[in-house]
Image (cartoon, rainbow, N blue to C red; front, side, top):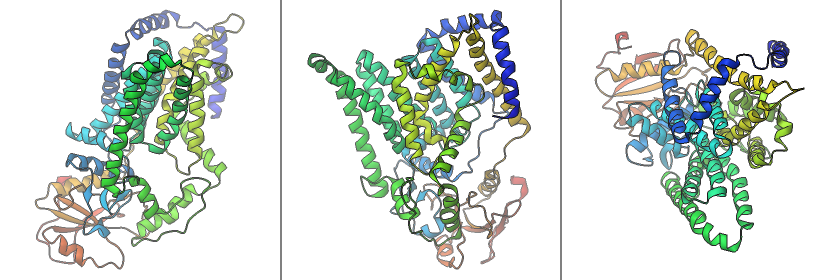
Length: 552
């Protein structure tokens, strides 16, 4: 926490003590309206979904549609393109040596290494006009499902408060909404599982069992390892619940809960096995696991020792896997854990959310939320057990965190010291600060837009798309090239695409590549020029002109 925040804290506490009901005239009216609205649960779900879309679209003037720039984003876009070609994977290409790139399998088939949920989201978006439409709809769906989950654990008006916090803290201004590498699918899966669990315990309805199965499927097909860790305490809690039921009750619960749940899980398992078989040619081997074993050879868990490094034909792979990745992730467990906590805190928390956390001593005594608390700690330990971490890795545990946050808000609201309702002031302040933060980030985004290097790649793509004919682009990198800026990504149908991106590999003869694509116009991209340059390939005569700047 910065010095400024420490200086503001005494002011906040003084206001909470001396003027706990400041603004009552406005707040009471808003809270009464919110309470009446929250009681209409179905309308709230629809309203949250539509509001999440409307607010984000309304911010496009400040935060425009993202341009892909990260390795993972291009990999997911390949997956989406594959699905839109009505297949689960693609044949390995004869020129795979030159097409090879990060986070993509080229053998035994050509496909993204990631689970298929996010690719399906982007494919839906492309069907509706643009991949980001799928991102937007998935995030709006996550907001609605998170609300539904909270409605099962908290009173309706507190579920609505939790939903608003999720929209303003997670949905807006985060890379879950402003990138193509996901987060929403796994968060939705976790919310479905946790929300369905609460309803199964109370109502034993088949539909809730089906929703739990679907949520488990989303986890398995978005964040399989983290999803598996997430589901262990839920499965244990369900088993304990069933164990304490009478035999006569089990005869009712089995057909109503266990049968539909097992049927959905079995269907998902069959699909995943079939998908693995198509992509890796082994039912039990995930694409990511095959890539990890045969291409990276890097340890995943903190207790694993470094392995013999692999060596690659192109210097970009050599740099990324043998220099960059070890520098980022092969540190002491203590240092990695500090960095993970810092990154998680930066994504999920804010200054205003520190206020509810002050009620943690009361939370530990709250039996109502014992399972979410255990679940959160268990998932956190699971994340600390692996070397890698980004905020979307923690997406499955988001549901548990928001239950804890919502319950913390309830405890905060009831805080009184010597009859002074300081909790009323502090709970209102949390929401106000979230709204202020959203306004500040909007202004900041408009004044200082974040321009990624991917804009330059997109510019050259547009130039080539507007130039007649089909094109082969050979990408050349400088010796000091930053490997995070990778240009060589293609669609599912390489030979049928208008543009084919390939890499220039030192000491590797380009003749087979040029002969294979002999019907195409050849170009070279000098990726590390400022700005990157598109030039005619000088190895053989060209019949077409370089695209002019007017095409920009």
